[in-house]
Length: 308
Image (cartoon, rainbow, N blue to C red):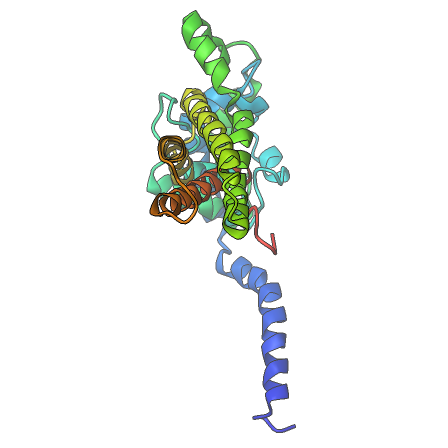
């Protein structure tokens, strides 16, 4: 076959596309291979990180650990749970993402976020397979932590008993934030359909529908934004921050759109109606981005990835 043949080139391209992803894990494994002594050193660094910044809320000594996750010092158990750790693949490990994006420990924790060096060491630990072997002196310390009886220390949940009734009430109301977002997302998006039909049919009657949708949607956006600020969430990642401020901007923009729709005449074919439509389009875009980021907080940025 002619080496310059388009068919041969296409076949080679396909072969490369298929084989490279299959071989890359093997190459990665070779690249991250370390000696037993080096592996123990890396694992000891992870132990120090977990002990200093995670064990207080996720230790085996707690009767009610945060997130019902109370075995932070049991490395074998963590590595066996694919929801937290995917040995050899830190980018697919939810636990690494939480630490890397400073969501654990959260912003309300009394301990600082992991340093760049601690994050790098945690990533390296996962890359080499998340081993559990520790130097003897560190292993004895871990055994002592694992042997502590449940109930010997109070959990962070019990520390909230000291909150006032108002603080507890506001935090409770904040839990309804996720449920409240469905109304503004739906209504502010459907206003685009309403205005598209108005533009296509040239009928003034569609303006009443648009006004109803945008006023109700703006009210729902304001409610969702308020509940979002009340929500007792510990995330401090860029995704969470972007979601919070995009949601707040959506509520403000919704009020602007509602004001344009109600206070202006907005007759078909006028500049006022054109400005209203641009405002509605931007509002629908904002609420869509805020909704996407809200889902990303829970499911990760690659949630919509085709190959995930």
